[in-house]
Image (spheres, rainbow, N blue to C red):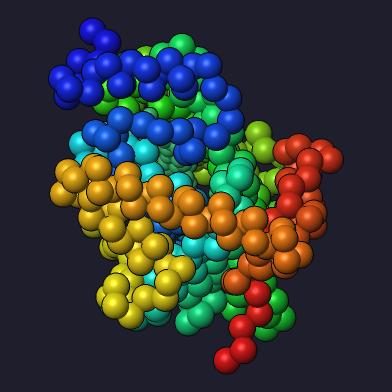
Length: 380
Ligand code: CLR
């Protein structure tokens, strides 16, 4: 039944929303959607999913050798997936439509040290509004680990589901602990996702295809995803393998299972437990300053009233406030053009061709190139 999970009063508008998705290509985030599907959280907050297991993030720098470090990086990566792709279902009942960030919107937060792993800090900035692009930088100085990346999406509708191709990549930098020092890089590409359950009105994400973690150390991890009805028959499944980058089919170690549940080593490194990762381990939500201490471009400050409206079911107030913000933005852009003073990024600089990406990606895709955003150097 179409719209079975949709509140009675919104069935008609859900129907027309689906029709408009079907005849629409590009930027879903700018579409008006029925109120039951709206989330009070902006997309600038989503990079925080990368940091919700601070101990796994810090462990990326540990390990006796490059292979062991690669297994730690892979575990941290797999450990982020449950938060990234199922947490709205858990907290709000289904996948939701996030608030569409304004240009220059910031999200700043941290995970205070708990067990000697060091403090992890996060800054994210909306570096483009159309198309929407979010840049982020997450760092644990004590552990010597940082992650820098950007995130955009290309969406298309296939009839019953929305396919989302993730555009962007991240680079994990790990300080070496040996005598020579220096740093190791891990290029992280992103999987494709599809949004299922659209017709029913209860959207959820399934991952498909593959992504890679390619390291300057000479090792790479390949992660393949399947959902219900594929090799495991279970939703949210993956198989990951670690191999030398120069010979990806010479698999050294492999793990498989559910990224939102338990996964196990298939080919385990010596002396390891059979469990690779248990996603039932607690995630630690990022901490942010109280609203009254936040700057006016900080996400929760920007969307304070809109989010309040969505949370309390006062959708008129929410949509009024959202229109006010969007109008202000249009005026701002016009003024910038009139004055010849284009918007300046606050925390990041745009890099037209990411040479680190070009170099590392060549192992799986010759000649590929992408731009990136780098965190501006800070004055301490
Ligand atoms: C953003 C980057 C994160 C992972 C992630 C998770 C959920 C994705 C989101 C990204 C991008 C925007 C997204 C969202 C799920 C639904 C939403 C695709 C990739 C779209 C714009 C809303 C669709 C509207 C519905 C019918 C739910 O690291």
